[in-house]
Length: 402
Image: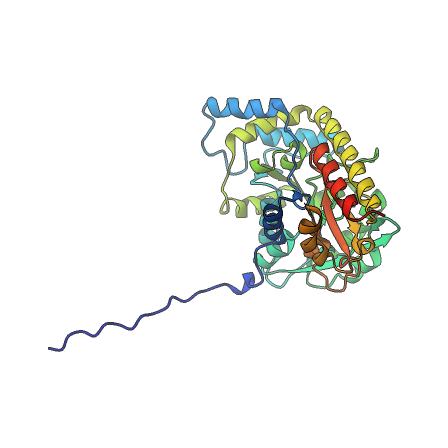
């Protein structure tokens, strides 16, 4: 009997789903590598370099020591859901039922992603404003939807809503509006008039709104945060997303949430339970206690960040880089043509070796190729200690003195 012949070697099929064909390591990965290679100060990532409230950290450690280390309910701890609802009522006068209209998530990005997965069908369109946080396009793609990014307009040193362009982008396939305010990456804070204009579009076309408000406490120059859910007619069609990460400088805790009418929250929970199910029991407890009286902390943090913003803006202007107002959040946009560059990506790749600083090109957040405002813009972060911001601006002015 002939001996069995060995089977020819086979190569495993490398499958990559069509919906993630364009997913690649983000610009943040490249920026981190450049910062490490050149020992550069990282003003690219929006990871805060500031301390968290001591009482918050102590409460988390106490919760761990007390044994609160197992799964919380999928919707989140009741204590935290009540604290979130009370905070929204106290600050905006909007009542949410903590049992039916609040869900806790593993950070705001999970809340946004779960919302798009829950509310969009394949082929639907999601309106947002360009440039935008890069996770939005990924979330839409995972849901089988298409992100339609409407460019922000500019007036002087400000970004602003183009209502006509937003309205013109609506089609029969448009399912929802995904709004981020305060806005990453531009630092734009949408005014009450702009929110009213967006509400008109939503109401006229029966759109649901998902609002990413993670920087809600970080609005500067005496202005206040306005939520789209506060506009008449919008509370019942708006899912409000926020988190503890930016508010308390604990981005690694990944404690986020979504508030809205029960039908929207239930839809998010139905997806979220099969993503992380639940997370961070001791962190949820600590955040719940902190939300009972967060205003004093956030007022101090806001003052600190405004000073750091002003410090960075002055340094960038002295280096010849025209800046846009950072009205809220962590970031300033700078026009690098004053440094002799037409391409923000090229500037950011040269910057670490040339000046020992890293930043992120605004084009990394562009999803509309017709957006004329992004090629020459670069995002700098000021959520770092004052001495770090000073050293970074010193390095910049040493290379590009206006």
